[in-house]
Length: 84
Image (cartoon, rainbow, N blue to C red; front, side):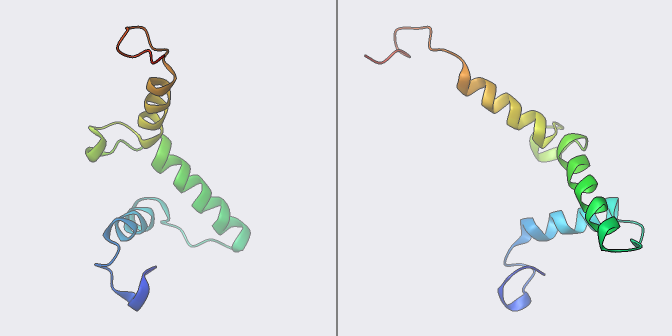
């Protein structure tokens, strides 16, 4: 656990992500620390860029993040959106 007092209920989201990484991605025992770091890095990339998330309506976190950035970059076009 990564929380104070080792209480898994204290940070359920972090525990959920840790569980997903362990059960879906980190299925092999790494030979050394270098390989472990590569495995974790690749697992995080897959989790964010390839794995659809139910809570995001089956989008990936990366796709949702990019859509959010694009929405904030759109120029204001209507008079209500333009502040003077």
